Length: 132
Image 1: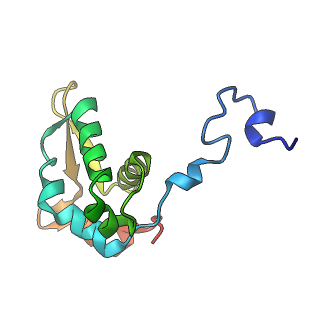
Image 2: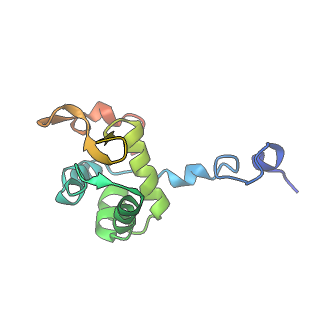
């Protein structure tokens, strides 16, 4: 039997990172679709609204189940909820979106940028690191 990295590491849970399964969660995106999504009313509806575990997970799940929106962003009609979550984590890592604290207990999602007229996602260099 061939040993996986998790078998020879100290990881006892056989997590996605040690098993090297995490790379399957990063889907390529269609730039124009992702750009259009960030400009959409659907995404705009979560901007500036308090985000918590329940409504954040509900938003990601609803997006993952929207075949047309997923087709536009990922080129697939049925990515997993985990794939969509990873997409948002990538947007956070690239500082295209961020979460701001209102009072140390409430968080809101915001688009980053120099001004409301010039958001970071409008600069193609901001997407460096995403797979297209």
